[in-house]
Length: 432
Image (cartoon, rainbow, N blue to C red; front, top):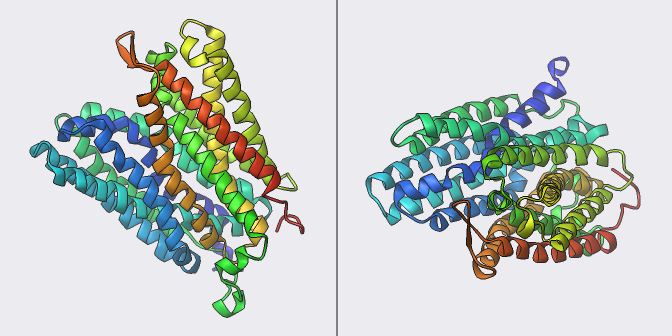
């Protein structure tokens, strides 16, 4: 059996199958308006389905991390079933909402299926391959986790044109038909990943008695401020990323690139995926992986400050230099957002070892859960309550509102940089 094991077949490929499936949660903006129109609710009302999905992703990872630690086959099967059933259920309630306009049952059903059920599948599916990858690629842990998490980021770039084509060609009710079809496709992909996923035959999973310490004991083995610092850095990076990414489409239209919005969304998704792979692979060559977070925050602060000082979003239309600066900000934030995700499990393993890594990583993903409720909602509030909407080539935009979001994100990025510098200390014994 040992000779038949292969790190690509038993770790990398199943990780990509799982993450390329669940990563399509970020395609929400492609069809959110269609869902709202089809069931007779506002886009704001349906938007909570996505927020709930991210919230339950993080919370299920936090609370089910021990299950992943004990049995990746059980957790990857749970992920496959929950994600596919959540998609199918969402499709059913969209169908029901189309037949019963303005039905609260349809909206609540979408919240439960897309938000809660899919959210559980997202959390367990996200965690399941991570430790396995780090075990197979001990010398290049960052590259390995970056490869999988890049699949999560790249899923949007891959699936968005497919979903748009399905919406355009499935006719009446295409929105619910798309969900039902994709629920089958993604179940097949994830179930194949579940069957292939195996830890190395040479890895001996410590029994409870051998581990000696529980997750909290391991975290407390270093100053607790160290873990709090990692959690806060992760939370702030996601919050700032979501704040900008949630407004990305309208910012692009605001600077006069409405016709290229789809292409720019794909390019930003590529930067997101590239940041996940590139930053984590780069961190493998560094003595302290926390250096990567310092670089991410410094780059984000620099580009945000430049766009703030130049008023790039407000003054960008017709000015090539400002357009380039705004696009640079979008791409840098996307890359840093992705890089923050791929580096956190390896950073945690360097500080706390591999024994409880799935559980500790799961607990840390609670930061993602809370950021999922605060990041885009914060940006929406700023845009809705500051500046004023105006018509630009037939599109209602709020340039001042989008610009004001940057004042908040730059402060948060500076706080994150200070945390990275002063709270998260390098492991005394180097990388583990």
